[in-house]
Length: 473
Image (cartoon, rainbow, N blue to C red; front, side, top):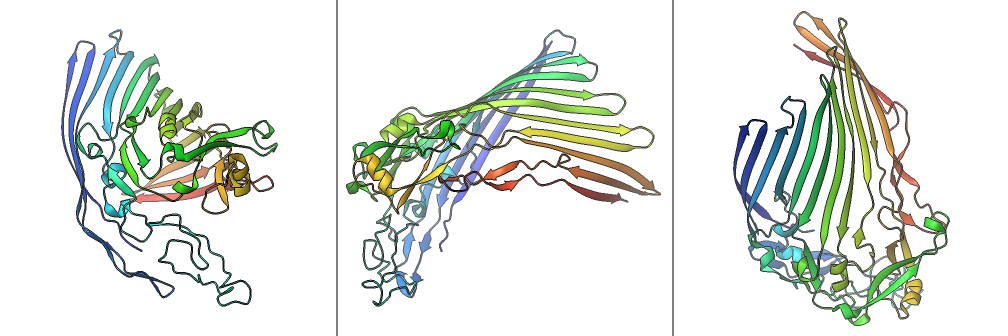
């Protein structure tokens, strides 16, 4: 058990203005951000495991500076009354938004020494004692080995991290250009265009388009290995009617490191564009409506559909250690569509509210994480595979190749306001999941040819009724 301490401070200045001339309205803003972080002095240990001095000498680290980001973010909006009658509006907005500093993610804490050492590792253990059944230590459920020795000894295999339990930095270097300066902080740009039209009095329809793209990606280069130390290979998915086209298709390109590079880590974090192009973008469409009828009826709703595309294939080719068993470096799962409708009506004179909501969401993307036996990997490689354990998890489904159930839900509410003297009581009855849908929310995504792949792990909450009352006095 240990604590990782990080501190961050942000300072921002913001100026904005709005100008209107004729049918045009223009909004403009400029924001200055300065984000800083550091790690205070920290200590790990000492620690005991099974009475052994696992970490007898504490590991101490001095105060370490983090980032010093400076950024200018422009934002603007334009609205045009197209025909000058207040019934048709064209709206455009553009803005740059910075990676948040509030949760100390990403670059804000990567320079912390505790984040740069091996704080976890795994190793095999066979409870065979000194020589099998009948020998000292056999079947006693106690590792008969020196846990401070990361190499093979006694009943314990070698650890997956040879520097585990030491102050040796697995992140050997961090590019200073990632941590300091103008315009180096991760960010995204957003551009939106929409047209809003009044079709009837108090009824309008809006159609819009949104584009978003991210910038300033990082990459981790393991200096202890080269790309030539990784052997490319592919496997064949099992023949299974539950898989696309009945299975039997190739899954690759996968990578496995040679024996001389297995378990060796000396990471350097730098800009991704030093190794190739990486991008992530979103394109979306929205159609919405809003109606506020004079007799107390209001309706709102819409359909939104968007697609997110990510690509890091050039980075993976240059640095196969980044995702050796994930061949899906180009992720384009297709358009995801959702619908929302909200309606409310208050009956005149009796003051009773009837309201309802409907939502329809795309199901979760599915995976088929297959624990491939080492023997199968060895055959595919043409040499002994180098992995930790006896299997390697490989996803047999590309992103978006299979989707879970679409989630449809209807909720209703009936409420009445009761007044007694100076008190006001709002009594309501809510019915959730009116159609009692049992669509699956999460699945078992571990694949095996004879296992329970895709069996539901959680479903939409069944229909239930809630009675509530709120008294104001």
